[in-house]
Image (cartoon, rainbow, N blue to C red):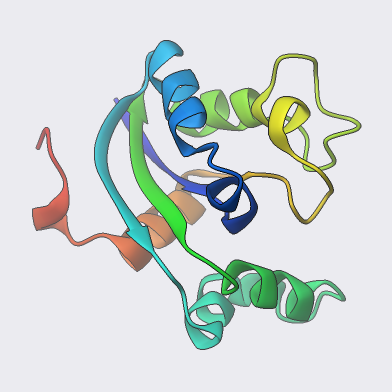
Length: 139
C-alpha cells in the first residue's frame, strides 16, 4: 500500500463540498489514514509550496491557500499517488476529464478544489509537513 497527501482547498471548504469530495475518495477505494482541518498561515503555505517559489503564481497560490481552512488527508491505496491524481483530474478544470473532482467542483486553475502530491518523494515531504507518525492510523 502507498500513501499520498490530499488537500481539500479553501474554495471547496468554503463552498461546503468537503463531504462530497470525501465520499468520492472513499468510493474510489482509498483508506483515509488521517484527516484534519487546518488554516495555514501565509508562512506555512510558503513553506509547503517552496518548490514553486520562483514561479509567477507563487504569491497568489500561497495567499489563496492561507485564505481559509483546508482539510488535509493521508490517503492509502495501491499506487495512491497516481490514483489520486487521476481522480482529481487536470489542474485546469476545463481540461480535466469528465467525472473527475476538478471537472465537477473546480471553478478555475487556482480554485481547483484539491491538491495532491505529484510523486512518491513529494508525498513523503508533504505527509511529514502536516502529520506526525503518531497521527496516522493503520500502522
